[in-house]
Every structure is written in C-alpha cells, then in structure tokens.
Length: 383
Image (cartoon, rainbow, N blue to C red):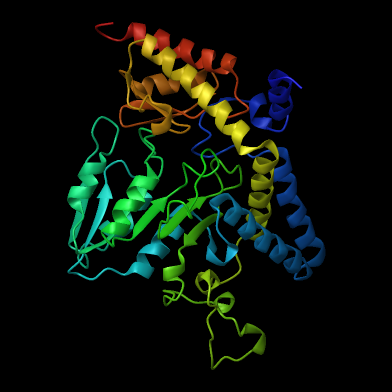
C-alpha cells in the first residue's frame, strides 16, 4: 500500500478533516472514530448495567496502565492514572514536599502546569529559580549553573509548549542524578511522537495527558513514579490506595507497595476507555511511522516559513524538536482569525503562531496554511 493510500485510510478515521484543516494536534488531538466508539460503548454499558459495568471499566483501567507503561518502557506498578497533566505534576510536587530551606528550578519555556503549583506555594518555598530561555532553547549549562545542594527538584517540559524545543533527557538526567536533584518531567507534548524511555533516562516523575499525541480524550492523564518514591506517604488517600480494601476494615489501611497507593478513587472510566483506544490506535499505526510522518511535515513547514523570512522560534535541527512549529508574525492574533475564517485550526500566543501537524495531515493542508501566512506576511509593514 502506498503512503498516499495509507494517509487516505487514516484520514477516514478522523471526522475533523471534514470540518477543519486541523493543525493543532499537540494541543487537543481530534478524537478518532474508534476512540469515540469505545467511549460510547462504556456509556451504553453503564446505562444497561449500572455497577455491573464497573468491572469491564476496571479491566480497561488496568490495561491502560499497562499500555502507558509499555510506551514509557516501565511497568504498570509505576503508573498512576490521573485526570490531567496538571494533576500528575501536583501529585509529584506533594510527594516531594520541599522544605523552606530548599529551592525549585523551573524554566520560562515551561507550561503553566509546571510552574503554578510551585508559585502558589511561594510562601512555603521562597526560593524558586527560573532558567531563562535563549532564542527558544534552554541551555544545558544554564540549568547546571542554577542547581545546588539545596535543590529539591528540577521541573521541565520534555518538549516545550511554546517553541517546541526538545530536551536531551539523557544529558539532563545525568546532570540531575549527579547533583542528587529529583527531575520532574511534563511529557504531554512528547509521549506518542517521540520515544520516552524512563529506563534509559531515569526521571523521578513524569506526567502527561492522553488528549494530545496519544489521541485520547481530555480528562485522563498519567503519572510515572520512579521506584525510589513508591514508599512515599500519599498526600490524599482513597479506597483504591489500599491493598486490604477487600477486608472492609475501616480501622486499618494497608497501602499498596506500588504507585497504586497514589490512586485514590475510581477514575473517569469513560475517558479511560477512550484513552485505551487511542493508545491502541497509536500502537496499531506505529510510532515509527507517526514520527517519520510528523518529521517530514514539520520539516516542510519549517523550510517554507524560512523561505518567507519569518522569525522561527522552533529549533531547526530535527533532534532538538518534536511535532511543534512556532514562529512569530506581525499581528499574530489577526492572522489567527484569518486562518480560522479559512477553516484552518492552529494556535496563537506569545505574539506568534503554533502549528502541530500529525500523520493524517497532508502537504496540501500545509500549503493552504502557508498561503494565508504568506499573504499576511506580505501585508506586514516593512515587508
């Protein structure tokens, strides 16, 4: 089968292509037909069976943990299902629980989910240190210079939400391990489009959502907890946290000896079913194919934006980026409205435009996007 036929078949899975030239897949990924069907099935099961549907839902919950563990090259004993990346990052912060004498190292290329939980507790942790980006990148030596013996953790986005800069996690984990500084990673923009191996790059915590490159719904996330933190006292506890729950013993709580101690209560089982279907679809298509397709489309986009002379914030080397293309253009907000009027969906913030093509997108769709950008760039003063 040719690539063209493969892409045509894959496009049939996504109703969004009938309504939009959708180029914001790293933000909220459109739901595929199998994902929607899986979620609708759970609603039907709950309508017909009530609590009887819980058992099927729980089986999918267990399978989702296994699938996510497989993507991360770990075991399901290290996976917690959350409702979002934010929830996972907050749980990691609560487990680490820095003291007032310690400091936290963040970067200004992070998303708010990676910084707000620390900023909101600034009175308890007064020393919050931001490593500033340089032209859309975070320099390794700047992180190294900011860490000291009192660093409670370093928190980064594996692929930054703004410029799309991709960290060298192997180099970073070597640094944080040598400094005995726990590393917290937001992998929402990474997992599903690049290989993330927590065995090869041993992070302490890694959080994400299924609603981006994993093609699942919103409302389902995950947190990887490294072995050395599995004995921590959970900041909140529910019946699913307990290994002795079947004893119905309200006077004694024996916590699981794995990440299940952080689970709490029943997760969103409708979302879990959709998330499982999304990950299964990703595995069926193949991450290698997806990564190659995205790399080719983003390279084409970067080449054409360079030809237009626009300020590209995304690093140009393929090893330093993954999926996201961000560039600045005069009157970006107005350009964004013009794109939406043409039924082209992308993002805008920080005075620029963000575009995240994925495997089902085509060069023709990118050309439609570029035609609007070129027209707008020619109207800009001084061009």
